[in-house]
View 1 (tube, rainbow, N blue to C red):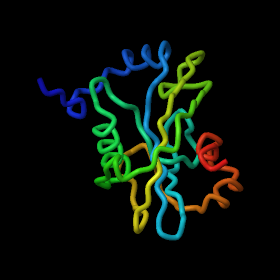
View 2: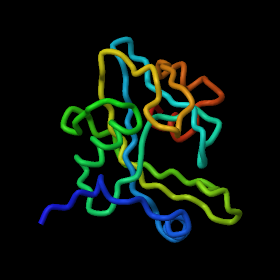
View 3: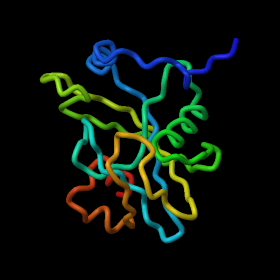
Length: 158
């Protein structure tokens, strides 16, 4: 039996909100750096973390392998075909938010994030999805000093 989690229909918002309310979400973040050591950051359009610069990433779907999730996230978030085997595993991190994607009061969001770092020759110029308004590249020192880079992204460089 072959499972293709990437082609599954997304859950309706009310069902997804119940999952966010009651369980931690497992996700992959992509720490992508170019030849000049700049890290790819996207300006977040949606909650949680709206209005901050954040590395690209996404939730692992039910029955999706880590390799499959990594490839899907890279393609949908930044428009690149990347392989998890090319990346260095940075570690597991917890991202705790007091809010959620639907902006319903009293529901927090809890991510367990598997952070992966990899190098590319040049950073993408345009977001591939609607979650990010724009991209920019900052060196680790610059992003640690930038007041609008989210603390969860800064944690990858501390």
